[in-house]
Image 1 (spheres, rainbow, N blue to C red):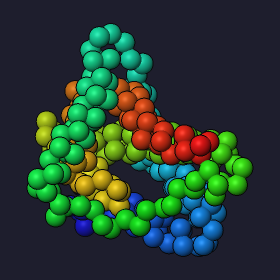
Image 2 (image 1 turned 120 degrees about the vertical axis):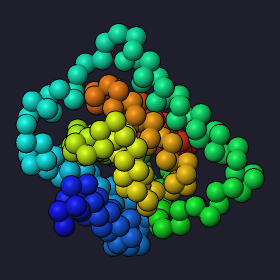
Image 3 (image 1 turned 45 degrees about the horizontal axis):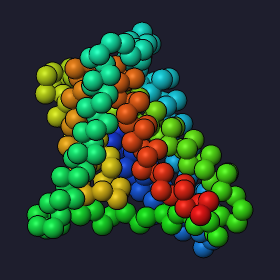
Length: 229
């Protein structure tokens, strides 16, 4: 148990259980697509808020450490690193989709997730603005929770044991955390390693948070647009 505590495997397992509940059980509480979508989104907002609270209240003992990880961006170097994350993510995705025609990584396709059905314009029942606010708000909160847990808390704990190789360990943990996502894990791994590596070089969550939130918002752009179609 001591070794498990050292590498925070227990925390990841607890998160996976809570995520499993969110993707497998919450959507089934109602057969109504809209109610199912809203209840699942609210569940993950609550989970993310709990993660934020736990990290700030119990995870990070030295509050000055938290302040050090949230630094304003300044200078070419910071913006360059943010650009690497942002554009690098789309390049990785494009390269992966190019290799799909060769079926190299089909065996790693993630079939664990039961995707939540996103409500269409008709199903939204005249509530597109509410759904849009819910999606944007949840996306922002999700990213804050992930960055706080995996960078401000977990990375700094892992650095004690892994030192300059922490970005690899942190990236692997972050990939496992997304095992219930829709992406092939091989596609997701380069992104997690890239973000962890940039954080190790900058030790500034602002640099990883800004491109992370932009990427996630763009990922939801098509869904939001179709609400008003």
